[in-house]
Image (tube, rainbow over all chains, first blue to last red; front, top):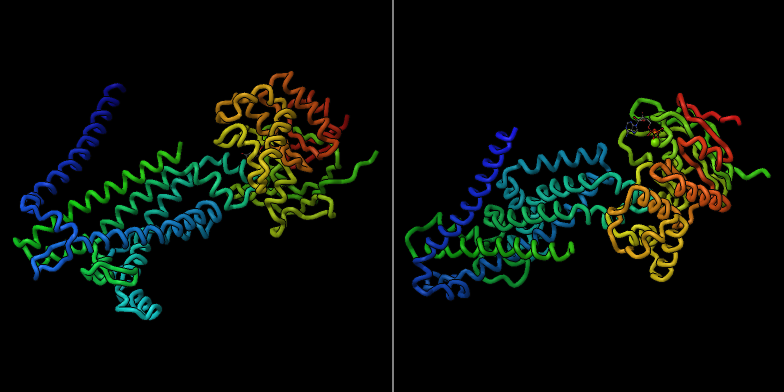
Length: 283
Length: 235
Ligand SMILES: Nc1ncnc2c1ncn2[C@@H]1O[C@H](COP(=O)(O)OP(=O)(O)OP(=O)(O)O)[C@@H](O)[C@H]1O
Ligand SMILES: [Mg+2]
């Protein structure tokens, strides 16, 4: 018995050390790859300049802004929708309609991203172009909407799982006191399912930040600083993909490691910030 | 004195999936009385209580047939009818569960929770009512200095009284009590009995209990639930 327990402990310990080391190694690797550019002292220019290789300027500010816009809008859209869906699945209709919706959502997670991209290009983009009659329709708005659909299933499954873990006696007590469904959601379920909701949010955020294909296919990939959500934009990930596909051993090529580093820092900051604010809130 | 009928149950059937727990119950519960329901374990007493505030809807697989009509002052209304608004029903029919179920919040917030649900903004009024309810449930002396502590740290018996206070705070017309004194010592149990005797002046009380002497002391009408039927217990 003791022997078994010790083995389990060693396995878990090595697994956690391994993942911690992997995270740090990747960070070190990113820094190492960016060193050539960092040494030239171009870093400030890269972070603030426009992107115009013909004029010797390799700034990625527009891509940083594009990434922030697209991922935060997609979260903003999908968070309330996911919350509503999970509430429907777990609380309002835990019977057949809820189960059916959950099955649909599970199927959605299995659809390859490129399919979402197609739907974006051939359905969503034309609609956005028609409705707003502005530009090509390839825009921050289109990409955010599509990305919202892509990341919702993750959130819905996480949220509904954490809703299901709220003890039944709390729900019964609330129900018997005459709470409406919404009161139940806001006063009892959310406060008790907060950690699960948070985890789902973090995962979705990571997925939104890290997704390449959707942005590449439907955000228009413009390198100009966007001024509205109907403008086209390019994300850091899409930028990396485009440069890597076209080039190697040029200054352009070297700057993509800076992009990677920035992406790494942005996601880490986002997660730490969220974590910090949740801790404060819980207290 | 003949009391008015408060709850009228006609041909009530209760099922878990396809298994029937109650088969064609017909009964009237008069106003301002304590009606007791006793009977062997697992015969459906708790389930029966849940037909009177439609709480059975929260149980996966449970279904009900028949009529449960309650007169809240505007004549008899079928509370199992889909259109009958649930929040209103549950404010008028209070319930104390067999196992105490305080919510994961402070002692004060637990009792004030029903006020929060009805949107009561007046803090002073809420505080007064909370204090009043806690006093009625004989819990005030023990918790008055720790109202902000989590209700989960209370002892089993204290939690039971907390739940009684919470059920009383909105002054329901009907009170469903599922073994409300099961974790209490004799003296506390007797205090709760005194409380129930006082409450019945304003309230219709259905009491599930397996203490025969308690039932003898306070119940006006006594029923036994067994074999899916409710039978009147003669003196
Ligand atoms: N959610 C459920 N699903 C299926 N069967 C259930 C469910 N809840 C209760 N039952 C069954 O219904 C029967 C009646 O349960 P109930 O809790 O109403 O009995 P009770 O008379 O209150 O018993 P006790 O005196 O032990 O509290 C039991 O046989 C129980 O197993
Ligand atoms: Mg019971």
